[in-house]
Length: 186
Image 1 (tube, one colour):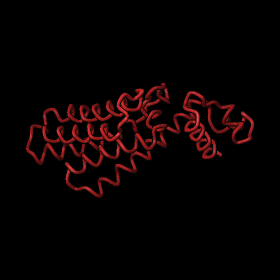
Image 2: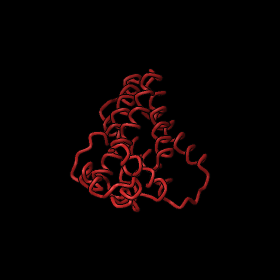
Image 3: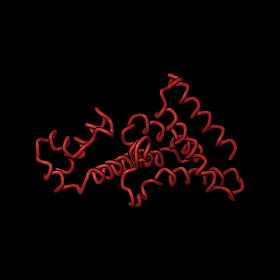
Image 4: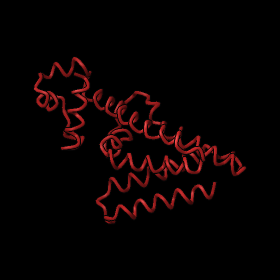
């Protein structure tokens, strides 16, 4: 029943957006009473939290595959950036919920270690590049957050604006060029 509730909620969001989601609409869609929903979830916030966790798990599976495919840290970092970009635009509903993009974050007051999942994956790749290049590792933590910030910022800009640049190829090129320049400067 929980899986069905989450599945219906996600489909409703894909069809109508996050702001239209309600317990009543979910109950109507699965043809059960509202109390049945409350038997499985405390409130709408709990449903949103669980959906965001599904998104983090999906992203992590994509990133984990990269670790097995790309032993070279530069290739790995590029693959992680590509996976993050791809995930965001193939799963915009999850991405928006996971990072509170255009809506309040789910799970208010709850710590989501999964939020830092991507940071962990890119951190390993960046540390590997720094080690290979024998660069100073004094600011590695800063570099990890800078890299993530740039990617997330670009995705956010593309997702949230009424696109004045309607060419997704150009946006992807900006991301690719940024990743290349970042790696070069490590």
